[in-house]
Image 1 (spheres, rainbow, N blue to C red):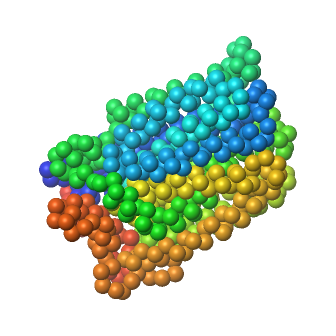
Image 2: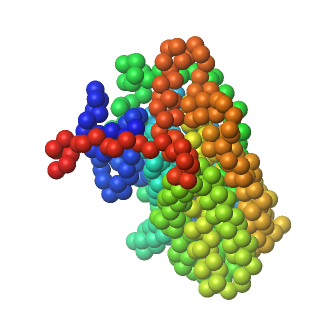
Length: 508
């Protein structure tokens, strides 16, 4: 049920209309309304900073490899290290969000990983370069807190769009750093520093940026629409959950594992390309360092609209076709991305490669947004764990892809890209196995058996004893609000009653 934020009884007044969980039912991109839109902007900016830090090295690799005498294997290992660190960090971050809230979890991780970014400036060997990239990569786990936060602040009506824009604008850092780091390097070198000193000084800028975002989250962030976890638990408005139960309901839900696999071949591919694309264009087409960085940047910069478009498409398909629409859209877009990846590896001219890469980036990044249009509905109690599993799957996919196709000289970069496209197509097929008894799957409609309503699905995560204590109330509200996932083509769709009138201040 949707209610006016201004008339929400017994709770703080909200600038945006909200549902029964006080999640915003609209997504106003350029608003700073507290807490919903302020949280959105804090989450994507902090994730953006972490992306810039993690991928600050690749655009400067041609200089760094000469300074540190790195081999192709050393560079490949460092690239793998940069994304492997976040595999378990993302699962841990999801659990931390479920138990302690996204605000504390996110700010803590950002501050813990910042020293590694500063230490990049003093790397003096292949081992030290690998280690700083490994520990900096842990910061990518802030993606999980970003998605958890959006799913906590925005209703099922717009959660796909909110997740898509927040993650997409955060991932934009992977493209922005391709422009930022060569530019910083050039400015510092032109100011009088030798090139082997200039690249080191340049790392202080992303490190400082990352530090500042952590303090912004601590001072201005908020876990839930009604307050922070600690306050809500102290007042009794939120039950303090058990780690074992949260983890259990997350890891035993097979849908989460399938999404983790498929996400490994949209976001995992994006991470892989961020690591190799500048060097690929620099070496294959004999471009200058700055030019290669500009070409490579177009891949990551597409996130400004591509991933948000995926989230938006997921919401649009859900309004018409329900959850089945979300699943079909995800499979279709990601499969097309795989085909374009194969084509990218086969074209041989600079112009054609750039054109195909841009279109490929749009589809593979949109698939990421579409994935997190589905994730919020897999589990209500273990949302953080499911988000962490899926996000971790992205990093696992990146590690495996780089290890198999881009480490050493077994394959040329263009052959590796072609084979990566085939992997995308194959690993997208399991989406057809995802089935929600209350909504159906790609090829089957909802179950006609008793006990398959939204309430049955989400309340099954709570024991009878926990229900007696009222711990399930949040899941009950979510179940009611998620009935829209039946789609407008279902005759039994329950539509929300008309929004209550706002007070004069709101209407003004």
